[in-house]
Image (cartoon, rainbow, N blue to C red):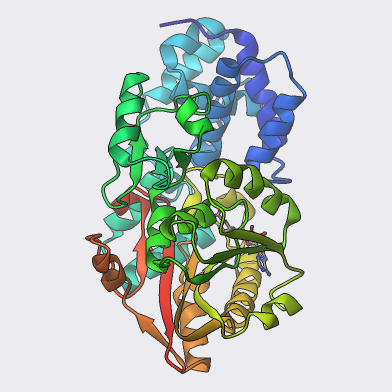
Length: 425
Ligand SMILES: C[S@@+](CC[C@H](N)C(=O)[O-])C[C@H]1O[C@@H](n2cnc3c(N)ncnc32)[C@H](O)[C@@H]1O
């Protein structure tokens, strides 16, 4: 047990002061804060970031506990975050006698005794939407509690082996050699789940593109696309290209893979990743919107289209806990309109017999089933292909029904939704 340096409490409080304004994504605010504090070392940044993210995950619970105590409110929150992450014994020698007494008192409170609303740490509108979905599927209330609990845990670190350069056994062996504990992911054939958060970017296998960091759920979406060698494929919302790289490797770097996105700055991040991936079939293209004229030129020519739609990100709360406090019913409704527009436009690319995969990292039916069902009602030329069949064809034994619905508490992945649609004529 090592005593925590008192200034780390002050820095955690200072960062919380910024984060709790919710003016932007928490990871960006945190990066900016650390840039303004160049003297902070890697380990110290880790301590601060973990503590403040613990507060964001359990904001309602922390705010409830912080109603007692007498220091500054955000200092109390920082202390609660640090108590969870570095432990009480490291923290207590660094705080005042009154704070020791308060921390001892609140740590005796059994979380199970708190009202469900506070225990779940979800805003009311989101808790209601999720519990309606859960009861619509005839699942128990406990299911909602387990989901909320899983969303409040940090995500594990998953890797995807780049099959152009390595195989999973090689990567597992080299991680073991480097003293890093890891195991194969349960579903994705090229996935590796690492224990803890070791710094992987200094490993030469990472620098040489033998693996990429990618959640197992994201990897599974790419198996739904299942592009083949020599095909014409579009990754419509490619962003920094996490899924583009996986699709390109599935195509064995043959055919043509267009990586579309409206954000230049995201596509720019794809370029260095492409360079080390060994892929030569990827064409990044910035589009103005889903109505860009470049899309018309490729209409009816594409074998496979992936739409990894912009969404609320509520399936990624393990990594981005701030999203539950930043999204609102109005922002979700606005996103659903955008998603419908992108889906309708991207669908024009698909050739007869070709497929499109509509995917989000949201848990909400409004961004998922509702968008797909409205699209299918307006486009009878598209038919739903059961997701479990597509996965089974690739020896992946995962059946969540006609749609792929991944849930953190059931599958240990981020929350994802995907539908496979085939153009019949
Ligand atoms: C969920 S992210 C994509 C993540 C990416 N596929 C990956 O695996 O890393 C959604 C992306 O959609 C892009 N986007 C937003 N509006 C768009 C539009 N109208 N057409 C194409 N892309 C769009 C955003 O810039 C963002 O990069």
